[in-house]
Image (cartoon, rainbow, N blue to C red):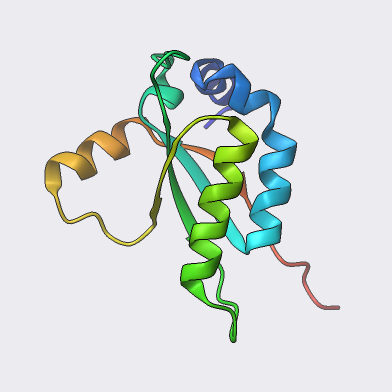
Length: 121
């Protein structure tokens, strides 16, 4: 996608989320989230501050010896505190329901992606 197309997509992402993007990225690093995507109303410009929540899909990097449940719940809670809104968090496992999968795929946008590991020289 071109920079111009990417900018147009970001124009539709809810402004409070964009304004806190650096802090969201810090939470992703803290909880071992390698990729975070937003979908739904916050991704398409239909966010209503009076009643909307945030819908996210997170991909968690493997962390041997660290409880996945604890990371998931802690990350969900930290996002809710930061964004001061309810958060519906899903993992990146395959979405079984074809209607939900289509709706999610139609609006999902990347909020955070872990930078690629540096090549060893």
